[in-house]
Image (tube, rainbow over all chains, first blue to last red; front, side, top):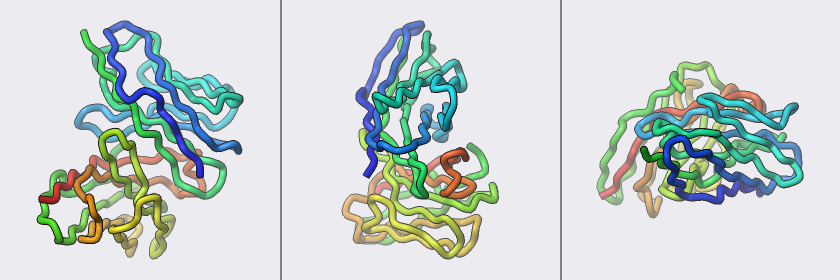
Length: 113
Length: 116
């Protein structure tokens, strides 16, 4: 069964610091990859997704992620975080078959002033 | 987000009682899902449904049951057999499971269930 690993459980950054959240998956076939974000008190929402083409994907609010197939990774990045980026971030993977998304355990990001 | 409602937001039940969580969507999506979210555990799939009158078990289906009598509705029952039912429950939908690699999965606001 495929699995998703998010290496950091809780990340604390100062405003304007750069962010990189790790995500690795175990499935070896064709995959589609997602990052979801859950802001405090809000719905889980899609941040960005990768299906094919350019492995560097741009999302909302200045986030981007890079798909590195050889490393089975899809790390999330942002050059300069803001206090409003405080949230929980989930990486998710689906293979090309008829199966639902598999989520990682999430990374809680706290941005301090 | 949007288009998926879950009620109530908070729910308290006594141990041993069954409880049903509501999920309704007006997005005309074929596929619906139930997840359980626990701190440090991420989202774990309980059940999903690709079409009316059909549903499949997810990774942690034991102690739960669902029905899909209408396209818009996918209620989840937490039975007394579920050993640790206190959690945050999220409902989601997408156009269909087969295309969910290209379709966004939309989430509801969640229901926090506390069993006393």
